[in-house]
Length: 284
Ligand code: BMX
Image (cartoon, rainbow, N blue to C red; front, side):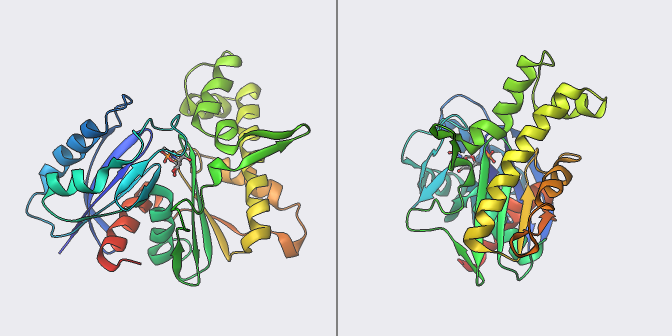
């Protein structure tokens, strides 16, 4: 029987009916930005109404960290989650089944490991989106760490000439694109920046390049730590036209020994729900 799976991100919420690596049906809507976790649960349950009676298990993934069913933001700018919100309980009550929960990028890493661009390999998954999330699968196991935060690449610290710099995601993800767009007089969000770059605007090109350079450096650093078979790139920005190529261009300069392998997420924007559904079935 299919599994109900959902993905609550900083920008959108996706609810899907999943069987193995097949997404049978989806419902999607923007994530309300107001810090109202009860409302987010209500919306997920409302979207899941369409699939009532079709599932007997549920698994979800969310931006932020989940520990024992309790949900907390790592970076409240990505989504202002009230600290320690009882998400597992709230959704189990609304959906009528137990709900297995993971971080969004960790679930996506598992999805790509099971069915996608890193099937059977040691992999590090990265999503460049509202924030920058990450997940690590080594020796066939999703590594969530002692606190559930393993892989949170967006929270890693940039090191500038004076020491402690910005968070990677503050400098390179969605909000950085929006800030860059305002500054350059383009306006709008990352989508507008990619459109402007396509139309030949050099300022847009620069904004994309700056983000890609920072993410390339993060990949270079993580490669020294894990030396995985493959890095898998996802997320709205990560999968936008030309973005991965810009990163690859930089990685190509590294010596062969330290050169990461980079692939696009094969499951695209469904990596999270496919991974979450599989984790709910098998409990990695
Ligand atoms: C942030 C953090 C991660 C998340 C990543 C991508 C929060 C709320 N989120 O680094 O847990 O995986 O963003 O999230 O602290 P997305 O919403 O951009 O997909």
